[in-house]
Image 1 (tube, helix red, strand yellow):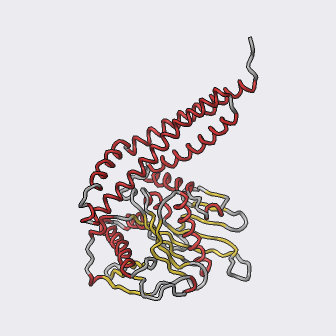
Image 2 (cartoon, rainbow, N blue to C red; image 1 turned 90 degrees about the horizontal axis):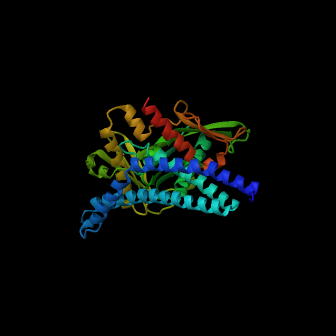
Image 3 (cartoon, rainbow, N blue to C red; image 1 turned 135 degrees about the vertical axis):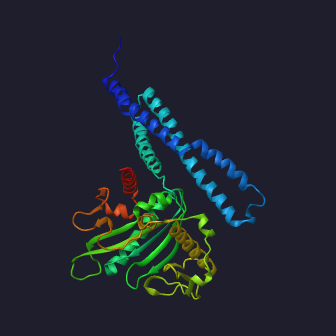
Length: 382
C-alpha cells in the first residue's frame, strides 16, 4: 500500500485547520448580518420603489421624486453589497475544494488571501449593523474648521479634508465639496462637503470632535514642536428638512466672490452665498457651485437640516451627539496625530492606534471608525 507524501498529508491537514472553521464562522456571521439588515424586506422595498420610480408623473413633484430615487439607490447599494459577499463566500468554498482535490499550494494561498479579505469585509458589515440610530442610515454633511495653532492649524484642517475625501473615494462614495474658506497663509479656515452614501452619517458621526496634531512645524524657524487643532462636525442630510419653513425676515443673505488659496478671487461674479439664521445665529456658506442660485439652494438645504435637528433635540447632549459641536482646542479631543519621534495616530476614546500616520492621512480610517462605532455601541448599553 502506497503512503502519501508527508507534504501532501500536511497540506490536507492545513486545509482542515485553516479553512474549515474560519469559513463556518464567516457563514454564521453573515447569516446574522443578513437577518439584522433584513435582506428580504430590503428587496421587497426595492420592488415598491422601482414601481414608484417608473411612474410617468414622478418628476411632477421633484422633492418626492428625489426621495424615491435616493431611497431606491441606497437600498440597491446595500442589497448589492450583501449579495456580492454571499457570492464570494460560495466561490471561496469552491476554490478551497478545488485546491484540496488538486493538492495545489498556490491555489491554497489564493484561497487564504480571499478568506482574509472576506473576513475584513464582513467585519465592516458587522459594524454597520451597530448603526441603529435615528439618522444613522442617512448621507452626511461634514464640516472641518481650523482651531488654535495658526498656520499649522489651517494646514491641519486641509490635511483632514483630504483624509476624509480619500476615505470616501476608496469606498466608492460620491462626494461633493460645498464650501471652502481658504486661509491667507497655508491650508483652509474651513470646508464643508457632502458624502452621499448609505450610513455615511452613522459611520462618520464617530469622527465628530476635536482632532489634535503635534509635529515639528514646517512654518516656524526654531524647529520647535507645534500643537494645533481642528474641529470636525458631522450632521445627517435629511430629505424632510426641506419641509422646514424659514421666514425670509429671519435670514440674512450675503453674497461675495468665491476665493481660492491665498485669498485670490476665483470668480468674477458674486456667486458665493452666506446665509445667517438670525434667531439661532447659525451661519452656512456655499461657494463651490457655479451660480449664486445653486449656492443659495445648497446653503438653504444645510440650514434647513440644522434647524430641523434643533427642533428635534430636547437636550444639549443630544445636540452634541448629532451635530458634533466642538471647540477645536484642549479638552474636547478625540484623536491625536503625532508626526515626530514615535509617528503615531491614537484615538483617545477607544485606544485604537496606528503607527502609519501617512496611511491614515491618505484615508486609511476604517480601523478607527470601526473601533469608534463599537465603543459607542458598548457605551450606549452600559
